[in-house]
Length: 448
Ligand code: PLP
Image (cartoon, rainbow, N blue to C red; front, side, top):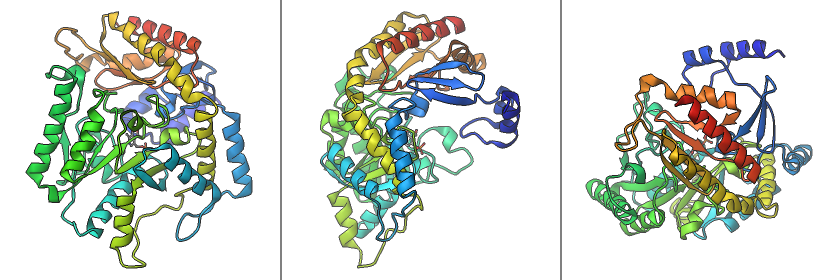
């Protein structure tokens, strides 16, 4: 179909998530047609270098033949099997075992979901069930971080601390609380240790205020993604886990973005020997080739639920497509590509190229901060490097960047507060990075 006709149909009928509806009618859709490796082709046959892996998910790059084969074969063999009641499929069982093998040792049980939001939602429900099962029904309060993103399910969106996700929804709930984000660039504290100590103290203070018997869990991302790629100091995650253990509240790590090689190791947790009670994941699990997420939990949580309830009592939470066999077959092949296919190694090898390219742009007049871990990074644009003042929203820098990025053929994320987020695929080459940074520099020069 002609691009203009498709665009008209899109504007007339298709609702886009987290997009101003009237603005979209004006700016129109950017219709993508095909992808290969790190490159996308849009409906006008313009080639774009994807520096964001779709929506931080296509970690393998596009067009991976073996993944397509795995999906096709599973569809031919058995396109659907419920995970409800006592049914299962081979790929779902093998994937659960594989995830246990590659994740922190504390995690032994897997519940599959359709994506990240409902992994968070399932985690909240299992946690609540657990506390009731072990005789602590008062533990109903959840703590997360300012700038945190934990998806958009009706309750999970309250753990998300981005105002857009609360507007008109009466969120956060009175049982949802936020601690300051460990944000080195904008912190008044000097040094990593001071930032870590302040976070631990803020958690202790909040738990003391609420009473430990009333606090269910602390949720955090190892690196805050949608909140602007905020990279806490190394050691922060472990310190928060130990504080949660000491305070007797569950420690939940949301690795929806940071999992599957995005920050170097298979999970960011593994870098600091962090042992969470629960962990959520999605995105890189299937590299975007099929929808799937998961929540993993420890023996302690699993057994608390299993033993706490009379026989035949169930956790009343499930989805028709939980543990979908096609998604599970895709995930198994994607995980093989990360490990045996060398993608994790390639990402780690090229991390210095990515980090160095971002840091080199600190010399640019617009760039106040460059930060990254693994292949997850950001540039923070400021109006004044001394004061770190942000650009006035009326300047619409964000829209100008979006348009310039398209003209120069680069896809990345421009957050509202003029933070540019990058998450290149683990299949990037040196040449891809050279092109990415050349285009990025040209974009910044153009909007200056
Ligand atoms: N948690 C985190 C940390 C995320 O970054 C996201 C999505 O970006 C989610 C949860 C929600 O995942 P999904 O969009 O798959 O529902």
